[in-house]
Amino acid sequence: MPVIATVAVATPSHRYEILIGKQLLAAPSTWAGLPQAAQAVLVSNPLVHAHYGAAVESALAAHYGRVSRLLLPDGEQHKDWPTLQTIFDHLLRQGCDRKTLLVALGGGVVGDMTGFAAATYMRGVPYVQVPTTLLAQVDSSVGGKTAINHPLGKNMIGAFHQPERVVADLDTLATLPPRELSAGLAEIIKYGPIADAAFLDWIERHLDALAAGDAEALAYAVRRSCEIKAEVVGADERESGRRAILNFGHTFGHAIEAGLGYGHWLHGEAVGCGMVLAARLSAALGLADEAFAARLAGIVRRAGLPVRPPAMPAPRWLGLMRLDKKAEAGAIRFVLIERPGTAALHAAPDNMVARVIEAASADAGSA
Image 1 (cartoon, rainbow, N blue to C red):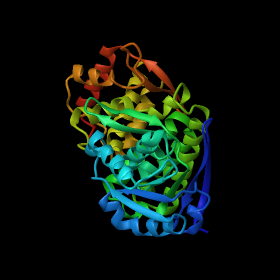
Image 2: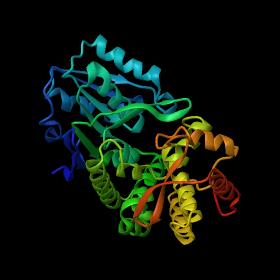
Image 3: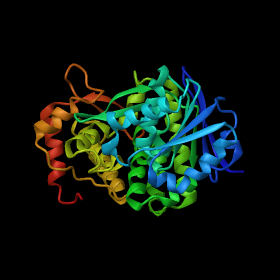
Image 4: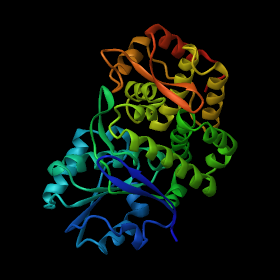
């Protein structure tokens, strides 16, 4: 049986399942029970499609009379309006109606852009997420957040639109470059500090196996990560409250991505460094202690992720973070750790944030 685990996501707007397993892409049961339509559109990028596109197209052809494909340019720097427009162009040229099923085969960029296109084409069409990176399997494919980037801020233009299904085929992780695997570990590590201290302990014990791509360790990490995200999203679909904790490390991380230029650091690399900075800020505010901040930095470093922030003037950092979606009335709000396994939004004085960044930048033990 290809399915190892099934995680249900139940939100006020929609209920769907995350299928986690091996050999899922070609399995007929993977695609059964999806919305009926005259055609399906597979959206991917050239590299991912070369590995998995034929299997998915063949499986879809058994359920849909017509299957077309659109390959997007690869990379975070292409997660923008012109690339999104190519999806709309394809849908219109193919005569797609509002029942057409979109299938996102790829990492977070493909998933976010296909989801946003599905949310807005004819005011909403169904779509399926087929994440092929670790980061997408444990985070971006789940929860219905869809978006494109703006030069001034990451994911600033988007919509909430839940998928019909998420298909996390663990076999796709075997073709990930080591850097992409490490980037995905950042989003796995995130779930421990914010929601499950025992899971953080497990990650710390199994980090070498995860970093080596051990199939059994990755299967458990993907399942537990999806369970945590499903629970949080189910309780707060549109990020009016608790869902904000999923952005631990992202306020700093998004500033790094926008400040350096999209694609210079991978999203997971920026989030990994951002978590270290957020943990240091938690300690500076008297929340989580210094020992926890040091422990988290060690875990992030062992995962092959940067812990030293890039050089940017303090006003640049603060200006970018004020564009964060959690900011209110010009005040930056951060997801901070109150104790391992518990996180919440907190404000912090600009001078304290600047000191934390400066100290992390000067830390001789950072890399």
